[in-house]
Length: 298
Length: 307
Image 1 (tube, rainbow over the protein chains, first blue to last red):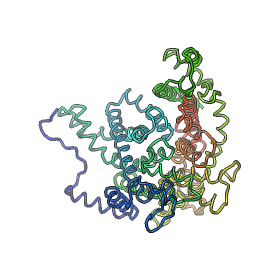
Image 2 (cartoon, rainbow over the protein chains, first blue to last red):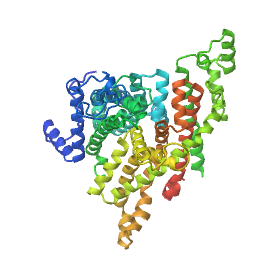
Image 3 (cartoon, rainbow over the protein chains, first blue to last red):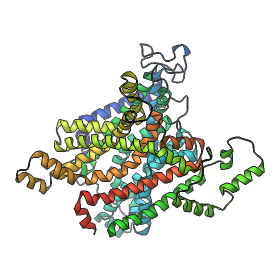
Image 4 (cartoon, rainbow over the protein chains, first blue to last red):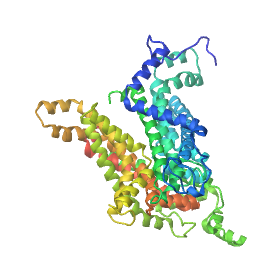
């Protein structure tokens, strides 16, 4: 339904304009060296993956049998793998997999999980009691095991890995969002919205969603690192990306058997993966520090 | 005592729900189990029918479900499609190796986590704190399969300090570090914030006022009071340990339940997958139950509050 007049949910009561607030937030964010470093690393990574066709000197799947397993040199900066493929080019292209797969996973988990959380938190009562219990049980499943189980049902492949890891993450979003909604729905402006005749869906979409947004942003960032790691783990186990895709986890799997002769095959893809996850976690940490008042003094 | 009993009984519905989910998911897995069992060996229709009957696959869904629950309670979860051995026996043969790894991982994780968290928490907002938390964050950001391979390469191959295969304590060092690093990261962060909370409490001021030494305040007063949230995390870490075991066993080519699970999934050995998940969740629920009951020992107030 549409209301006779606009009702804005009071997010922050302050005299500052939106852009001033944003600027202040960015300044406070950047005060932390680690977080700034995280943003810098991530930016480099994103630019590299977008410009992969221009940055990568070789085709990531092109094989040069003569150069097989050769060490890093001026032509192949990070060495060559078992099939004679340039590792630097594969890492640059592989960033696309890690970032896209990680973000798709978190987005899927976030949308489904927070929908469940908002619904349970707003409805309350028996539905909430049963739903919350189910979430608690699901949280007890080791997420790698759960993801493996889902892959067993759906089959091996990168898309199925995204779905599997997202399913494993859904309960986390649902639980936190439900908790946030329980707090928000007791606020006066929700009563006010109800008093002027807003229905449940309107309240959920217009009032609850904007108010749990900061929580969602923090939780999404914190889970992005985990999503990138988990999807790479499944590819490493042979359940995700299939050869010859230049996915970092799959590259590490290739490198394990040649550790003694060509350690660069496992060193560089792992380093790229670590730096990516670390940068995302640094950013998530800082965001949760700034957006979650409880974490501020800690 | 009544609280303990209530908690123990509370485990039943959780296990029931979990096992129901496991059973349901298993039904969704595509492919005829008999085909999987025959593994490409040609067989007549009659043989197939007999096999279906033997496995109880000709029974209606509900009957199979009830049979499954009944058997799960008794610890009999059928036989593997591949090896034709009872899955319970297969699991119990491999469980020891995984338990060793989990214990080693816990020792490393808790030790390192406690140390990092305590040091950071007692000197909050100093460069020591920043450094400790950076190390902790690296711990949760490191891909365990990568760090496992790096450890093998550096300490197993290049320096040859520890064996990378075989059994015994020495061969357990690198896998334990691999599993432990991730646990240490999460644990350190929680210990730190817990300690900071505890250090701001009145009883610490009292202890300071009566002239107690720094070490006594830190260990006897702050640490003990700060242990509740980390111990809770310990229960949740069981899930992480299992996940860590899957990857670590794979990297170190160790036998164990994690290796078994990945192989069972790739081979579509459904009874084995099912049994592994049933036992994992049971272990998780039981450990969390133990942790809950442990609270009372660490913090007597909890018991008073709940009685």
